[in-house]
Amino acid sequence: MTRMEQRILGRTGRDVSVVGQGTWQLGGDWGEVREADAFGVLDAAVEAGVTFFDTADVYGDGRSEQLIGRYLKDRPDADVFVATKMGRRADQVPENYVLDNFRAWNDRSRANLGVDTLDLVQLHCPPTAVYASDAVYDALDTLVAEQRIAAYAVSVETCAEALTAIARPGVASVQIILNPFRLKPLDEVLPAAVEAGVGIIARVPLASGLLSGKYTADTVFAPEDHRTYNRHGEAFDQGETFSGIDYATGVAAAARFAELAPEGATPAQTALRWIIQQPGVTSVIPGARSVAQARANGAAASLPALPQSTLDAVRELYDQRIRAETHGRW
Image (cartoon, rainbow, N blue to C red):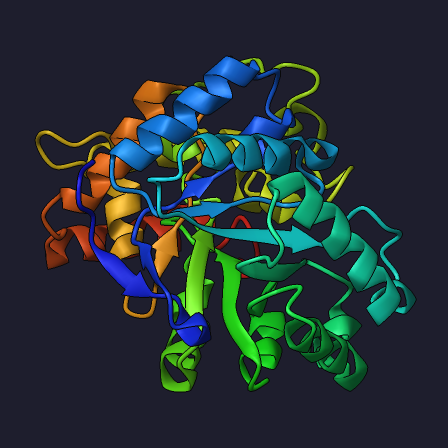
């Protein structure tokens, strides 16, 4: 196995690889993925030095968790920290975020993953009011005391939600959308996380594939792919698909971003490298649907740091092409 840089994941105290493996794709929301192909992706990630898998109980209605559980059972030599999420299988009202439901959701995830204690459980982008509820954090503390989970965290849609969670002493990490088309977290969230000792997990790092530079205005995605059915937030938050950017705008900006890739690196690897070197980031979690993608993602960790001129060019691209389009929301 390749040795990859490790960073402490906030208040968990555990080391994780700077490039992790996101597994939303393995659940089926990006088109069908065969079981053998899913195991191949996980294996390639581990061989590339990945020690962090991110999943959720809602990915494929548990399929992603089940695949990870079976894979790790067959790979006892793989020292992988697994973060899952809970909450999105229920109606999105604050009243559902209570201890009894947490226990039931945890029982299902523990069975899917084949473990007694979950490494990390993240609230999965719940209603905004949940982040400020004392009762919710008391319930999460109870899960830790009962040894159902080793630590808890949150996944958020907005910077305001992230800042609310970071202020809570039991929150180990915050998962947030961060990529060269999504710079708002750099201003307040990352500095606050560093000061509090909270980990940052960067998701949607390639803006749903836009930053790979592979798509054109004529690209057609499968009907069951969220890049078809959620472009305007029809099924869940719009920011989860193409980072909330209009597709045509994103394609044009991605073409410009691709020109910034250094020699020997792909645009996707350049985007991952950019995220890795942002102060406060613990791990970035690109997805992959093939062995080649998983290997290429892992290789981004060993790229040289991008020069200041490239960082400045990313900021200029964002200011000129993205900020106005999204009205500063992202």
